[in-house]
Length: 144
Length: 144
DNA sequence: AATCCGATATTGCATATACAATTTGCATAT
DNA sequence: ATATGCAAATTGTATATGCAATATCGGATT
Image (cartoon, rainbow over all chains, first blue to last red; front, side, top):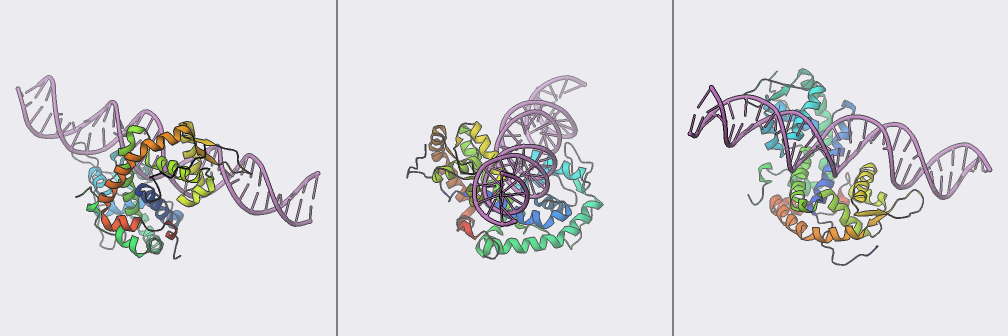
């Protein structure tokens, strides 16, 4: 093998490569910061969203996070086993959940570490990227 | 439970949440576009990088992609089993790899689908985010 | 009432990811 | 020559992710 044609169109301008790379780098900053508490970036997001919602309906959370329902289902289950979330009675097929006391306590402990990570992420990203990333979430839809 | 204190500092400004969300959305665009070929966004990145490098050393690829060596090791192994990559003799502990004929053929088939996904990603992200994401990769380091 | 249907959630399966620990090859020091 | 240590890669384990298929609840149709 070992050919290198000049006609390669896929290069480092690929948004998938850059978005995934960015996700790895940024996730690492938060994971490292909160590792002493045994909680990961993805879980912090779910803790915070649940806190804000009070009682969170899975389908709502999925819509906000653009996350597949099966992914959320398993993330909730892991955090339920950890004692941070609990499922509450809901209507129909819905299985809403909320924070437990342990979940609230963890969230409070996480906050100062999150703040440091948030600051570090901002400097790592630089102003342009940080500002661009801070735009309205709803705009992440094709052509609007 | 069901309390909602006003003192919650972690909100939707969280860069980890936004970077991961972005990664899910953008990855989905490319995964969907290239699903007919049975190849995923992460694998397309590795195909393209390997093509550009000719012979790719794992540690180099990890540095460029900010990816853990263990992750790359398993991704390479999967793609080797698929017949797209092959390991070539290297010095010391190094296990460099390159594209196989099948890998080159796949890459060529992927290119037009990638172009469509790249265009869709650009419109989905919007100009500001797309431009910001297109900045130099090397700047993803704290404070520089 | 029995059936169908749409919304919602969960399961099976596969890939992607990282940390900790281990293996391995090479160079250097003793 | 052996030991020591460094660099690179792999393995064990756990979380994160999505698609396809399945299960389940409740409402609408007949």
